[in-house]
Length: 200
Image (cartoon, rainbow, N blue to C red):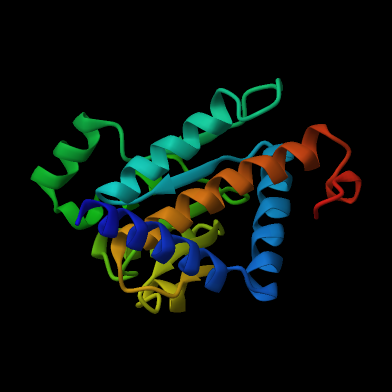
């Protein structure tokens, strides 16, 4: 029984990643990486938001940029808006949980920044409100989503949707995309650009 679960999960994960690996999504990931590199070069920041497992992915990605990914290079300004418990609980208590990210975006964001919104459903109200706030400030918006993308897919500038209804499989693709983003940005900024990378 255990072996069956393990085999099925691995097979499902691989199939989900294979379905995601289309020319369209490859082009969108490259575009996202190029825009992120330009954002960093111009003094902008990458904000990352999500709930639950997606909040963990947000923090994971921010750490890869601020610390390092696979090469030694200067820290890069990525910020997960999921980590400040005082801000989150204050906003949630005084206003609503729906505003925990949008208020932070309004306080910290500026034109030229990028917001990465991670949501497996694409329907989380606090994610949608943050995207709305970001767009009103001239901040580029990117969605990592699944299950058709929900409203989030209609509201963001770049949409990377995982065609699956299973949250775990969607999240596995999301973190792979995040790691690829780090590698591509490192190549653009510190290793001679993507043209010098034989696999891109």
